[in-house]
Length: 233
Image (cartoon, rainbow, N blue to C red; front, side):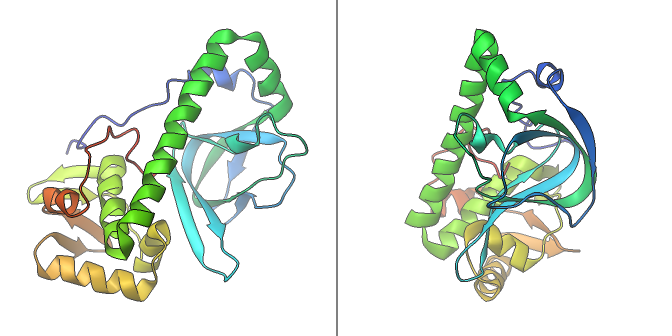
């Protein structure tokens, strides 16, 4: 089966960044690469596995920002800041390996290499635009629209074309799905139930198949942004 679209890649040449890696590190499911408030002197390139980037709110709720896989960069928000602390949590969902780059090493190379500086700035711009569009959807479209937006993003990131629609090839509990859009498990259950009843989606073995993607897009006034800005990565 073929994916719905070619997965967008960073403009940064990952192989070039790997030259600056201090070491490689195995990751174990359930472990944290870093947590909010820890001293931040390293960035990470994911070589394999999956890592969830999230934040715990003051009332104990979890909001998931990204689900990162191979060739994704995490910990990048600490660059060019004094006495930096990690702002988010990086939880390993699928064991793998990461390359570790010292923050000061990468900063020094960016100053020396104008091409690398340009490519990194372009990647950061794409990353911030992705984040901004996600928060726009969360704020303007309410709980239902936020979930619709999340499903659309998931089809871009993990969608596989199947006979009756687009299979999101990522098993998630309703609570985990709700964490992506700031909704409770109960609200997520109800909205998914309505979509299933109306024939918009189907759920089998914990995986969602979107049968009518255009319905979801129409409901939230989707602007058909490029997949690089409309993803969960």
